[in-house]
Image (cartoon, rainbow, N blue to C red):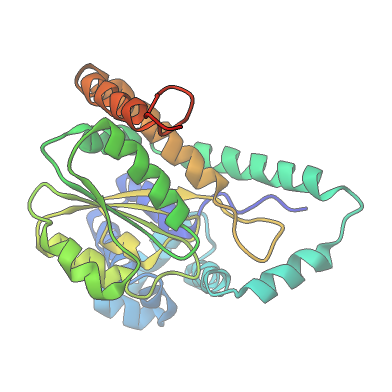
Length: 296
């Protein structure tokens, strides 16, 4: 079983920004603003759009470790193919690899490799910045997840809502999304979870939120959601699995780590809130055994 790709092209491009000349940074920004479509055009057309020379494209490709533009473009083409894979295609691919090892052992190895690759690529300064944002109780937080990632959004919402006020979740009905976006403003935070096959409406949602002054935090896969071009902060996790669907375990790890950090940062002020919540649980007998509600 091959090890998952460690970094998407878009993530590699972001990480290399400091190495680039001004014209190369201009080219990189053009690629990221319309990724991956911009990179799938001819080098002449890309140079024209970015306002740089074609030799600049070749130099940047070589700085990223490619032989030239053609090799760099082929990586982008492969990523597009990976992004749009349907469940049946992924199942057939994994089944064709074959293995005598038990599924539990194969899955354990893959999840471990995913987690290691995710941690190797994780920018700790991004983690700290997002933890600080989520710990700022003057900022409202709106959280949304897609068909598969909604459980992650639920988990983050449930814990943040215990620790601090001003946390809400975008509902599943698209008709109500404008209501949720209406309350966003300067200083608000929109947290989106989006992995392949990406939510087609999320880029527009992110754009609308940004126009209202919100900061966008994105949790995505190693290939990168189209929302990446709008996001202020991006967490990219390796998600490949042995099934027809991607694994969200590495994303859950990042969510749990953020919850732990926010809890540590807010504990001096959130302790009272947590205690009040526990008192309500006891009063209602939510968890059983601790309250006599006068029943027979």
